[in-house]
Each structure stands twice: as structure tokens, then as C-alpha cells.
Image (cartoon, rainbow, N blue to C red; front, side, top):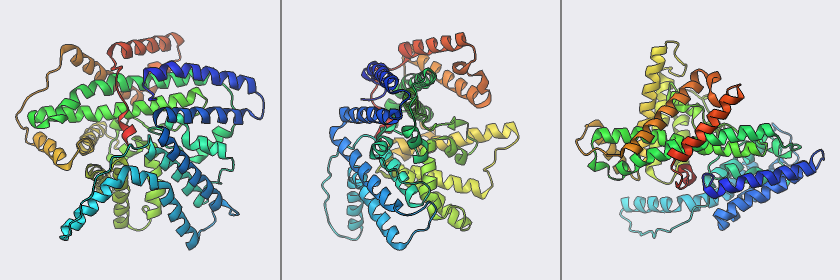
Length: 482
């Protein structure tokens, strides 16, 4: 069941109503947290089973492994204590156990093909038969969330969760299971264990977040896809200018799609009284690529910083080592997104550019507004260039698009009907205007206006726009594939 499906929109009000009844019956009692956890755990696994019955087995496997060994690592040790060699070896073994499903389902073919190519380079012949897998829904997200918890316990930053029910819900909470955000134990587990109170304020805020998320998905992302998909599918037939426009539209499409999902997930969580981490902070207003990663996929950036960058040494071992750690961290980010060289190159580009920014001291935001505007534009162009590698199926295709753009190659222009063109123009103007208001004048945001009638009219207008201009028969979110 995907969060933008018609069935989900029909079911979620009923589920929230039942949750409200259950919380009302148990209100004031100490058992309200347990009752809430039971209800939401059953709901979360029902959500997963409706999509992938077999995938739920791997979700539970990763949950069980990290729960058991979290208890082992925490046994008899206070937070902050050091580690020894045996514990390090055990950690390596447990991490391998936890990531085994991810490695098999997502990277097996890539690893075997890479090994085959390596043997071929030395003159050895070996043929790998490609295996077709149905990758479990959200496996990268729930694996990283569980691993993050395990590593926090291992480092003594948090105590292991004793209650298995609470931990099952922490790893498998259904709004964030498919595409995040990736929560930390200290953020979500205390909310799961707290006495639950059903709040109309949470309902209102959750609906607001969901509504803007559906706008980003249905009106922005899926409308832009009507231009991006045909151009990228046959890029050799289109002019360099058309390819460049498709690349810009894809940058906005993937933002609308992923930020849209995140807002819907955060909004659904809020309906049940949970506050999930905000995953986006207007990334295309970043003044550097370093700043971009403070604003884009915030929960993954944090995970990589705490579990890859810092353990490698961070910036504590000299400039050269720091640059190597940055590149390694963002190469891992590329690998996390998919088993393809295009993702690795995408992550490598982001790592190299951040090293260049650090070398020239471009981390601080300039005081001059003109310089800020120029740096925002340059950052967008760099990020946009990297997205081409992210989007295309092979390095050859990515370089093909880049060449057509750089050489201003002649070719066809994609023709859209007037209605579609008008919808795309409206979506772009609405997106840029709203993002600019939120960045520079957040008090003027219509959905948060202190006047009730303004908020009501804005809600009504958004619903009307989504129903009339949105692509309502769209499929899954882009980031569910990662």
C-alpha cells in the first residue's frame, strides 16, 4: 500500500479514528503506551504484508538481530565505556548478519558482475548468471535505522531497548518504512514509550504536512515527469537545450517526489502523535554543495556523518585524511542508493566538490546578497549536473546527455499540449514561490497563517489544485527503489 494511493487515502481516516477510540478507552492509564505500541505494530506489519509478505520476514530478521545483539553489547556496561578487540570482531560479524539481506537482494548481481569483469581483466573466463530479485520494500531504510541503533548502543551513546515490542515498532513504524526518514533511537523510542494522548492539534498539523506533500508529489513531481521521462528515454533525438531543460526538471522532480514522500510520512506519523525528523530544508537554496547536504535527505546525511565519517576520523587527522574521509563517505552514499556505477559516480562528484569547497574555505554563507545569489545558482548547476548520473541507467547514457548539453547539439524539442504545459508552469511557479517564502519570510506562509480563514482557504485551494492538476494515477515514489 503506497502513501499516495487512493486506497490509502480511504483507509487512513478510518485507521486514525480507530486509533483515537483505542487511545480514548486507555487514556489516563499507564498501559496507554503499550496499547498504542501494539496497535501501531500490528498496523505497520499489516501495511508491509499488504505490499510484500516475504519482505516482512526480512524486516523482522533485521529487527531481531539488532535487538538481540544490542542487548549483548549493552550488557553490564555503562554508556561511554571503551571497547576491546573481541567486541569489535563481534560487531563486524553482527553488522554483516544484519546487512546480509540488503547485500543479497540489492548488490548480489552487481558484485558478481564486478568479479566477473575483474577475472576477465586477468584473462580468466567465468560467466555469471544474473538472478532476478524482488527487493524488499524500504530495505535500505529499515536496515540503516536498525544499524544506527546498534552502533549507538555499541559506542555507549544510548542504552539498549529492553522491550521487544517497542523496538519492533521503532524499526518498522509504517509511515517511514518505505523511504524514511531514518530516525535515531533517542528521537523515536521515547515517543513510542510515552503515555499516548490523542490530539486534534496533531491531526491538524499532520493534515497540513500531508497536503503539501501530496502537492509536491502529484502536481510538481509527476507533472514534470511527463517532460523528463520521454526526453531521457530518447535523449539522442533531442537538442542539447531540451536535454538541459529535462535535467533541470528532473532536479525539481526528484525533490518534489522525495520531499513529498517525506512530508506525507511525517504528516501520517503526526496523525498518531509522533514527531519524525524533518528530512528537507529547501535544499535548492543552498549556497554550497556542503550546505546542500545540510538540507537534503537530512536523516541520511546525519547517519553517514555519525557512522561513516566520524569513525573514519572526521576532520581530526589532517587535511588530506579529511578529504579522503569526505570522498569515502559520499561514495558510500552513492553505493547506498543503488548497485550501479552511476550512483557511485554521483556520490563521488558530491564528495570531490565538498573537498574543493573546504580547500577554498567556501563553507560560510557570504554576506553579500549578490554573491549569495550567484553561489546558489552555481550550487544548483553542480547538483543538477550530478543528478544526470543519478538518473541515467549507465555511465555511457549519462555522458551522452552531458555531451549533448555542453555542445548544444541540434535536435528535436519535446512538444507538450497547452494544458500540460500550463500545469507544469503553474507547478514550477508555485514551488519556487513557496520555497522562497519559507526560506526568507516564513511568517508569511499561508498554511501557517495565524488567521483561521486564510488557512482554510489555502487548504481548500490546495485540495482543488491537487484534484484538478495532479497526476492521480501515478505509481510508486522514486526513492522507494532505494
